[in-house]
Figure 1 (spheres, rainbow, N blue to C red):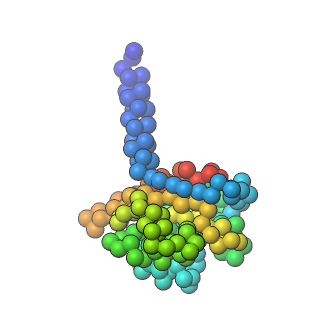
Figure 2: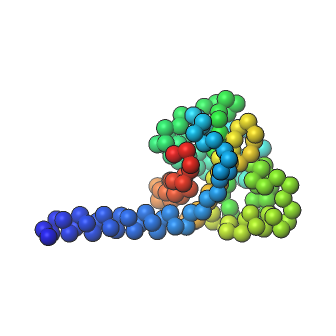
Length: 181
């Protein structure tokens, strides 16, 4: 085998292992009865919505997540639409140290209607600090139809570009299993 084929095969194998390693930490769940084929556009909750009150992120932090979501949805051929006319809303939540805010977020996206403490624990059992959650919320029913989450450990020691790359990769890993894509 020529040396160039060896390198090409090795590079292909390493790339496959890297993708497998990145996606193996991503978990997802979706409503199997939901018609994902009818999704033609999306939106993100506007800045004045109750979702901004649930999690306190700066505008700079929100912009980083929202730009990455917009790029990932554009790659899947979903155009951005005004919030009121969108088929779905992409919601995101960065789990910091406490899971208390997560309970409020879960209720807001109706991840579990009327969940008691035991059901909340079951819903959150795989979610830890330093994780990013994305919910796809049906805009008519105002209920999550797809949820996925992945580890996202941003570091103050990273430069802005390195942290943005981590955000982009986490969002890509989260949306890779989105049924409509």
